[in-house]
Structures are given as structure tokens and as C-alpha cells.
Amino acid sequence: MKKEDAQVPSLKKLGTITRKTFKVSQDTLIETEQLLPESSIPLVVKPAIAGVDLLEWAASNKEAIEALLLKHRALLFRNFNVN
Image (cartoon, rainbow, N blue to C red; front, side, top):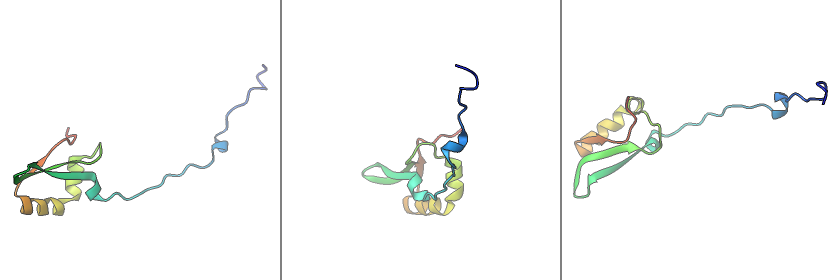
């Protein structure tokens, strides 16, 4: 095979790739459940999907956290990646 015969792949053939953004509801990022069935204290808050950053989520959801605290009096955050 000659060097001239070799085909060089072209990125133009792949077409245009565009990024699509979508908005994720903050409610879909976490799940809540009772630690003990007979008690509402504490309410367990855990990520619904992998990779939820607790600090970022908490900073964006201060009002939701305050409402949960008023209702349940104690929150237990579990299974978040905290470094």
C-alpha cells in the first residue's frame, strides 16, 4: 500500500457536535427517609444519584434544608462524597 492510498480520517464526516444543557431539579438529586420507622428524628438525606457534592447542594438549597430542620428537628447526611 502506498502512502498516497492511505486515507486520513476526517472529523468533518462526523458532523457537528453540540452540547445540550438541561436543568436538573434539586429535589431529584437527593432522597430522604426516616432512620427509624417509629421516629421522625433524624431524617436521613442521601444522594439519589452518584456524584452529588454535599457542599454545593447545601449551598444551593439552604431554604429546603431549613424547612427540613424545622419539620424533623435533625438531619443525617449519608453517602455523600466529602473530601
